[in-house]
Image (tube, rainbow, N blue to C red; front, side):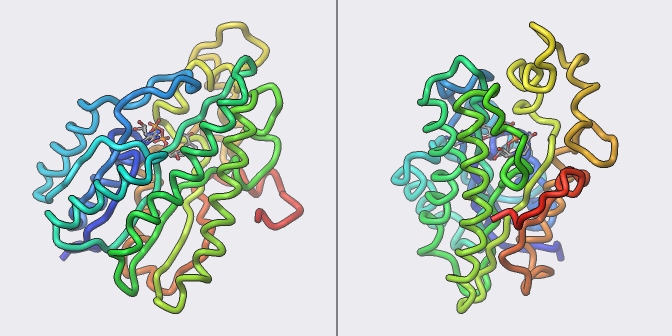
Length: 287
Ligand SMILES: NC(=O)c1ccc[n+]([C@@H]2O[C@H](COP(=O)([O-])OP(=O)(O)OC[C@H]3O[C@@H](n4cnc5c(N)ncnc54)[C@H](O)[C@@H]3O)[C@@H](O)[C@H]2O)c1
């Protein structure tokens, strides 16, 4: 028996990066997956988002593990599209036990307009609310909701730096609100023993981090920094000296939070940040 044997888990942003790692780790432990991803770009986001081929590859890898998957192209800003994807997934897979609201963008850049702020908020925060909204009618008592926040939502002087533009401010705003949403929703759903927790990664080795716009954020002293240039600055957000964590490191925490091993764990801000939060020694609670 796997640690999430025969559970059905809805994952947003599942085409690549952390979302794909969550799908594979959960499938390894016996889960079936409902996966969505935008599979196209958002104009204010300087690096490319996923493509249909990425989502197809996640589906192939889940099936290779012997589990079922319903994968749909859907934008988390579109509540109706998420509801349709979840409805199709539940009709094919029979039920829904957990949600992993992971999809996100990081539309940094000092030349961006206010639209970048709106895009960060609507994808990184409202998209989480939409994912929960789509899943809630199907979730049984004892279900699990996991939302992906960020160290940037728990500590100041990260993406809220004005040099990173309106999208950076929007990213911090959105992730702070993910933390707050999880806290209050945990209280609301506790009578049904539905658990609501956040994972807050620090730097994670995905396309979001490995992008020119992120290299510039870490090396503002250079005009066109490369990944190699940024590598020396990445450890600034870690207390442990590592430049980043791997998607699989976050997936292990998501697995715990989806599994019944965490059945009495709710409202938790679970940091997977190499001590980035304690290094910054915030003086106030994060939400
Ligand atoms: N990479 C990091 O350093 C880091 C650090 C902290 C938090 N995070 C958070 O982790 C989560 C996963 O990001 P990642 O690191 O895997 O990056 P990623 O860019 O590789 O993956 C994000 C996925 O979300 C999808 N997506 C984006 N907008 C979408 C939308 N509107 N609707 C549906 N899907 C959408 C993308 O296509 C992509 O497949 C995000 O919420 C991100 O904010 C990342």
